[in-house]
Amino acid sequence: MQLLIIGTLAGQIGGASRIAISRGAKVLQTDDIESGLKTLRSGSGVDLVMVDVTLDIGMLIRSLNSERITVPVVAVGIGNDSQTAVRAIKAGAMEYLPLPPDPDLIAAVLAAVSEESSAIVFKDAGMDELFKLAEHVAPSDASIIVTGDSGTGKELLARYLHGKSPRAQKCFVAINCAAIPENLLESELFGYEKGAFTGAVGRRIGKFEEASGGTLLLDEISEMDPRLQAKLLRVIQEREIDRLGGNKPIKVDVRIIATSNRNMEQEVANGNFREDLFFRLNVISLHIPSLRERPEDIGILAEHFVKKYAKANGVEPLPLSAEAKKMLSKHPWPGNVRELENTIHRAVLMASGEKIDAEAISLTGFLTTGGPEENTSTTESASGLVGCTVAEVERNLIIDTLLHCLGNRTHAANILGISIRTLRNKLKQYNEDGFAIPQAGESERPAALK
Image (cartoon, rainbow, N blue to C red; front, side, top):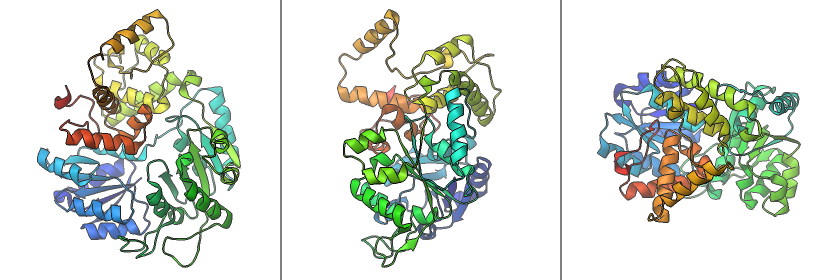
């Protein structure tokens, strides 16, 4: 995880940097936006930009858009000035963080961007066999496709493969093919030369060059446009890329790991994914089972997350009560491990007393195939929506899911089954309509929505 700080943050750079470094991030810093843009163009692998709110955030966002640089931007400023925060968000910032820097808020933003866990925890025999196979194939340079439902830990397995390979000391670069429009994804992958298109004011190094010598993760590759699939096939075959606007190929040495939450064979059969590219990528196939298929893992994962978030929030880890464990074991976990992690994070914050009891466990209202009691509850819940418009129900579902995920937009989008781009567009619309939007770390419904 690499963080770029642009500006002086009102003299708070040292504190913000120390917090980020303590949470596992590497920190770069520039004094102004132009220097920051030069750093971003250089292929330094920046995952998140934190910019002083006193600088021209609108200009930064416009430059990023015109130069096709996709990186989340967080505005940082003194205090809780709501007008300043609104201006920063309207200018295009993903979040607004007040200064002095709060460790928990910075940690939440870093976690939302990196989506990394610190350990791989499982008890299920099938998972044990999966990781034995992963360890066996990791030392090779073979391309690998990792499949599994959203939230099962596909990127975590990809990082495990990288860490067990001879490339472990080189870069691991990840890009989400579903979150970036096709025209931007091409420049993200291959980079561009100055003047390649309107707004290309300098050379930009793409992800392939960033990852050269290491591993490139193509997350949700099944969402890639067919035209770009053809270009990717050529890169794999020739082991060279062409920057947009360039006049000569550039050799790259990259091990590719691709992930998808779809059935790739079916995508090929449906004509959505090139068969020749699939065969190139699918030298090794690893499938992660959903959490509901490995119920033995629910308990130990829950205990792991209790310890993790108790430590992160400076509180004592409390045991889960019998009722809480029963709730967790009965839930279908449509969001898989990611949903469980968010649930336990919130429970750690909400718990009181000597145990984490059922009242601290907040579960999303997905249907289960239970008995009459559950069916009655579902009917009553549905009848309570009569009189609401579809738009109102959708807005409340999105806001409640975002609160459940402590403001983490990526996690919320996965649970809701929509793209992060769709979620951000809806939240932007809600904000423009005057509704308060939960920010990173928030678990209480904003006053405007209560």
